[in-house]
Length: 131
Ligand code: MYR
Image (cartoon, rainbow, N blue to C red):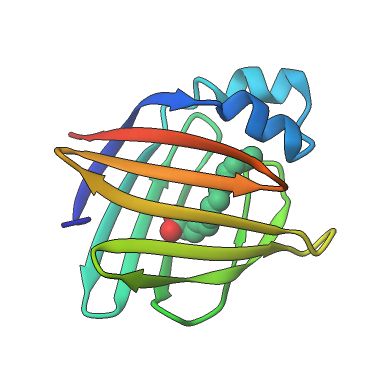
């Protein structure tokens, strides 16, 4: 169900979320219009991800339940993993610089992919449409 290429359509509370993450105003303004496109390819418990935005192009592989490192566009490193709960992907990641936890969920709602983020009490969503 997650397979395909997803292009960000809209954000909810994303600026506040990034602010909580400690991201500067200038970077937040750029990130709000990053034209993020994510391609997901699932094979069993393995995923291949391609991420394209105005910041960068990046490919990575992860396996459900297996910890990996992911760097945000500003260089902040996260370590964590995704698990599947029912039809929902749940990610728990820890920032390497301060040890604080970022949780994220990917959920298919209708024909959209909804990715929710939570960090230090602030929640946001990015909603993607299939291309
Ligand atoms: C992937 O499955 O796409 C790779 C792993 C993603 C890890 C969690 C992403 C959190 C991104 C937070 C972005 C907010 C920037 C302040």
